[in-house]
Length: 450
Image (cartoon, rainbow, N blue to C red):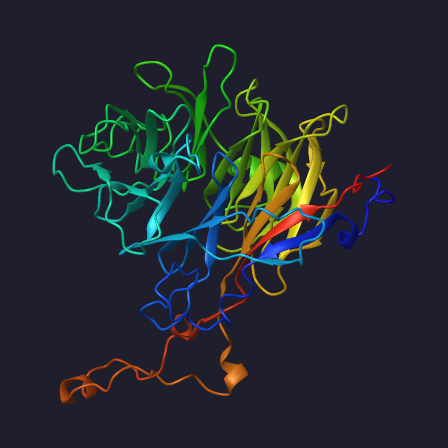
């Protein structure tokens, strides 16, 4: 790759708006929606994910404090006379009682139509719930969709979810199965269940057929001229499957393991699929894993064959890091991929799909000073990019000289006789790093000239 034409980061990206570091901000006194929330353990929650709504007017975020917030983009975001960076404040918030594995907004979301401002969440031991994004911080779910075991009727947790256009149905993933729901049938079980392995009761759990494990990622392929679209599913056991939900049976088109390609060909390692992402043209599938240093790129026209990989995407921990794809510049070939990293930078790969093997990032910039950039999402206009950052850190014992004492309430006499240590475990001494939501403006004329 020729680096001579790469512009400095300051010439490419300008910070247009930001919440500021929510970790260092005081808790607001007013009852209006807030982007910060104190957890039960006394730590302030940090931004985990961010995504644009379909109409491009709002950014939805989820935090480690189980708080979902909606940030409407300022009208003067790109005004040349605006005093940047503008201040981002949430106009709506939903405080969940339990952590949610998924967050998906309606594909028909419109800021001018309140009835369309819907989103789906899923928590352990609860049905999938639909909320309206309102200014109240404690709204009740408008409807729910139970996903239960057929024999015991216990709730299954949706570990992934995709809500494709036109929005009449959504698909949820759980352990060893996919479920298709009709949005209009509130309170009803799925209209279709698709097992990802033939049988869970057999000792071999499918006998090597299909993909076993919790479905951790789902993505819908951009529909073709005939409105056909495949759904790409990924699992914690490092398998990927393609399913056709356009038909009546949700048939499986292909399954393959990414473990060998990640270890032997790309050598980027990995420990479970965090994200499946389609290219804008629908020909290529990107697979991102946790504890990985790259993103795998597959051409779905050749099932299971690795086309290449995006090198240098540092995602060495368990924290979810999501990337985004955007059409490439006309005549340049391929498409663009934007992704955050654990070191606070955002990296951009251009011309993805136009070459085989390792693909180094074209350019990058520092989006966060201390913490992981968990989400990077490009606006549909291609002129602005939203990023959110935040993570825990775990101080070493040597940093404070000795382990911290547990600061909980004093125990009873029986507690003092127990074998429970009065010293905190390392995970109990975690603390927040910087956390913020930012909107970046791509500078005019910031094209690379080779």
